[in-house]
Image (cartoon, rainbow, N blue to C red):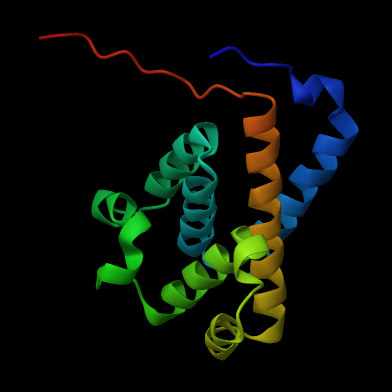
Length: 152
């Protein structure tokens, strides 16, 4: 795959603004592990290899386990995720697939029970932001780094 353009060079001020939103969300008090799970799950749904690669690496750097990363796309069937994480992941799926789901009341009620209004607003901005990044990376064919393993 070949990148279509360098969007950082094409629109540096716009990308800088999106990065600023990311920084604000990271400083909002949401747990870093939750942030990375949400980013990874939305990226899985959207099929963004660049972002999946980036956010699983970031999650590992923040102490996330391989098992939880491997099972993330089947989080509903795994006991490894807390009730708060489950509410956030359901909300992530509902908003990432909003054209299909229309953000169901049940998902909203569950996430609102687990998060304060401020946290929920920040979580929702996080979901919107990662979906924007996914669309940018997929649309412009961003290519993730490739690590070549040497054969034994």
